[in-house]
Image (tube, helix red, strand yellow):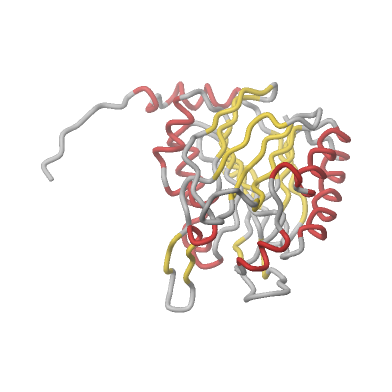
Length: 277
């Protein structure tokens, strides 16, 4: 199966980002990709909650979701919208960080709200409080599709191996890991985390990423790591997009999942244990 990862530098303008994504989808489909994936928060990268309130929409009337569903139908491809920032009707006014798996008819096959919020202090100058603006999801999501069983995750989820292990034990062959990974933590941890999750689960890990310095009309600019990546179930890196924007095409063979799990069947070897603490 031919897949395509879109690596982009989303601004805080959803309309402009949609044009960029649709152009990349057209390019990837023209190169024969059957499954195309975008990064996390591909509609809007912003640290201004006031700006997000102005430009984001509810799922039912979100122009980015509608436009990307139309693109999937136009080109007859499966599309993983890495995630969209969306308004919710929660009493505290927080947004959802929501991933969508779209079918070739433009229908929504599955959707997943990011469970783990990126609340960290990387340094004195770099602090993130994702949970201030986004409410965490509560449900793991596994989708059966004609192109394989796909487990959905988003970015910081990759640091929580029990989630990805549960998806693999539920039958996932592919784990999607769209990201807007911090430039600092990405340089230190991105590659080893993606490879570790692939090896532990015997899955393909497909991680389309944001990259570079993101233009903003309000608030400070954010810098992301890039290096969109595809890792095979045995841990081989099949693609690393570096830091440039664009489309990366990779051929994957889902038969490699069974081969890897046959060699090391660790998904079936869990044992309970006691703790002395």
